[in-house]
Image (cartoon, rainbow, N blue to C red; front, side, top):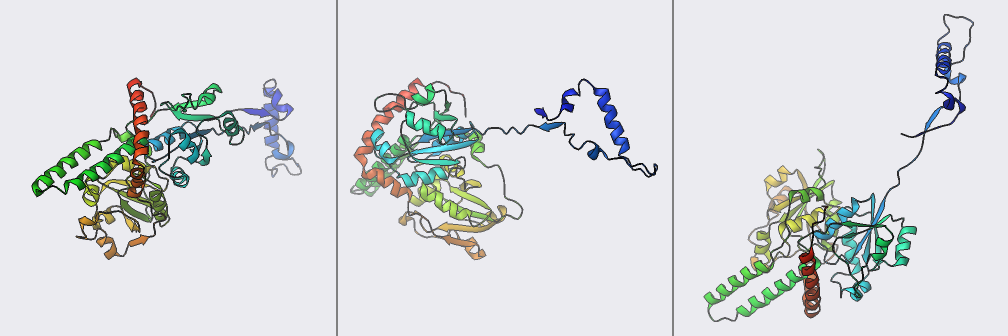
Length: 427
């Protein structure tokens, strides 16, 4: 610990230790009650040495490290969230730049999500402290100087995968040259390109199933449908390798307090979007602890069709866990809320939004919220946005040719990345 002297006494202590000790002892004795020495009036120690503050601790606060990370964050997924988490670990405060729609169009093609939706997703991440809207795709010298001067940024962060401009140059070359660049490890097994591919594959599966309905034989039709379902599942296989450590990294690690009002909301949370973020925020405001149930892949397939979910259970759970409004997740929650669930998790209120997706052909055999309704703890809340997984997917399907062309180019660069990939330390 650093100290500084504020009087001549401190400077001479090391030379006159016995003299100083004698002075202190005499002062202490004189400060004792004078009940036995009537008539003697001696000043107490504070009066004898009114300014004997020999040592004073230096007020030297530790500088908080501010780091910056940017991206398009289109079709937000757990890979983006993990990159944000890693970036936050390199500093005390994380500022995230969201690239403008115009810059994305110029460098990558049309974005699926608009700026407002992407800002909502980034702001909803638990590791983000500040957001800069309409950031440039490339770190120009002017923008870099603004980051350093106006936003007090210490380091600029990006993943180990290359980020190249249309002319082939490195988008972060200036930051590297300035010595203010730090690298994190890319999260394997997912990318926006991969998700677009899953959506296009799902659309193809739906189209083929519709054409199969014209087959003359019912048995032949069913055989073709099952074959297409099998191929669709193969197309949708994720290369993500879930680990217990990753779940721990995303978790808050805290349970509800003994008197906490626990709010429960469940759903598929497939292709995590701005609508999910805002309904979770609304649900969290109803209590002290938000518990989110994420349906199994099998449940979603039964409710919405075999081409769903687009993201598997672990992928969807991580996306939900990354949201700042979520306290805990049930990974593989049952479709029906039971009395045992309510008791086990001490649930105070069960909520459901006004916007949800379900295949009408599944029928209404029984109400999954019958128990909480009978208990008087069920509540419907207005969904802030009418965005759904299907509506987001339809944006890609509607511009099929553009995204097929873009994906073909991106898939080639990703194959090259994996072919040349080397081990990078990090998590």
